[in-house]
Structures are given as structure tokens and as C-alpha cells.
Image (cartoon, rainbow, N blue to C red):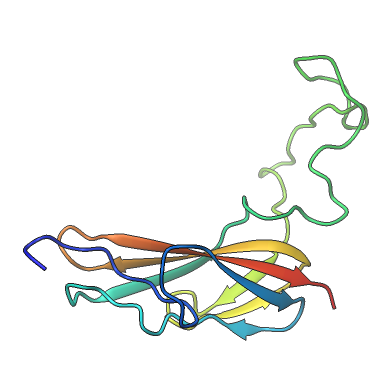
Length: 146
């Protein structure tokens, strides 16, 4: 393949390619994602990193993004009036993650869906070539309630 380094080729649950992989899941029912078959065309070692991508997907049920009546341009007003209150000491409270990923640095993480809706998981696979290269694969979970 020449002197250049090449990106890893990712396989998730037996499916190659670069398109997102859609998976149905259920709240409280853990399952394993499997990157067996993922390889580096140059034979370099690979490092796996699976992570929940909270900015994509659906919000928390019952907690809309916008709340309250509209206010004049520029903000202001109380939270009940649609204003934006100051964050509590230490910053805003993080919402509960929709999924928990255990063993995220392996090729076979355990995923625990916690909240119904749509959740996105990203797999980043980095080689140890020169320069190091990273390939990504998106997994879109459609999580049903119990």
C-alpha cells in the first residue's frame, strides 16, 4: 500500500462501511457492540474509544429545551417568563446520560440504555502509524421504554 499511513477500516456488529449503523434497544436491557474485524490496512495497532454523543439524538422526555413565555430580544426576565437564569455554583447540572458504556476502550463494550429515545454512540479507532490516523463510525440507537 505504499509508504503512506492509511485510516483504519471499521466493522461494527459484522457491518463494514462508513454509513451510520441503526440498532433497536430497550431501556434496561444491556447489549454488546462488537468491532471484531476492524483492521488497519498497514498492520498498525489499534486503539478503541466508544463514547455517547449527547448533542445528537432526542432530549430528555418531559424536559423541553425551551420553557416559559417569550421575552423581549436580549433576554432578561425570570425563568418563568422565559428568561435564562444564572447557573448554580459550579455550573449547570449535567442531565443523566441516555446510555452508559462500559469497557469503552475495548472492541466489545457493554451498552446500557437508560432513557427512551434516540441516542448516538461514536466509535473512534486510532492507529499507531505515522502520523496517527483515526476513523469514526456512528451507531444510532432507537431506545424503546420498558
